[in-house]
Image 1 (cartoon, rainbow, N blue to C red):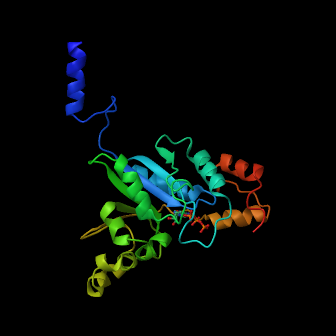
Image 2 (image 1 turned 180 degrees about the horizontal axis):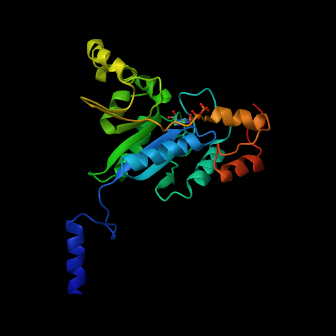
Image 3 (image 1 turned 60 degrees about the vertical axis):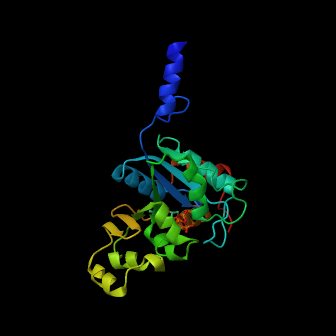
Length: 246
Ligand code: ATP
């Protein structure tokens, strides 16, 4: 009895509840329409988790993405495909953070981050995973400077982009003066860009030549999907007869 009491007090003092002891964790947040999730998404998440020792990567399909005209498959089908594609990776977690019930209106990343963060320990660190094409528009995202305060970025880079392109894409309040950015033009977009209030890690050799658009086109043209998507996702697309029509 006495031992139980003491043990409970010790656990309380070190801030542990119900026996869940875990060290500080690097957590990845990967949002998108995932219409469908494909090899490029998985390659980015794998490379990011290896390079930055991510203990968990949340894949968050958006119910209503603010930056796209429309989605092709329903939220539920896109979520199901994310769940199938991530099932074999221990640290990949399909997330309902932007599900219709959780977020009935347009899904803004800053709101998703604010919904996720209360589950964090103080020492946990958040990384936002994103492709360089999407990063180019980051300044247009709602409260983009707040997003930079909340997390570091891991960006899948591509040949042809320079560090100046990355710096120029930053929200106005965080963007260095043109004279500071100019010398970055000689450097390709790789390595880390660390500025006041900004940490961007660039992963090169990650981006695969695959897009959800190409997959939807292939389905419509009755072409095999090969290794573009996980076999379970290909089977799901077939069974649910997704992407057959525009
Ligand atoms: P679509 O072709 O419908 O525009 P998409 O293939 O770009 O879709 P999204 O779900 O819109 O997929 O992308 C989610 C995120 O994944 C974005 O940050 C995007 O830049 C990134 N991404 C998309 N394709 C790749 C790829 N081949 N390699 C690395 N990142 C990618």
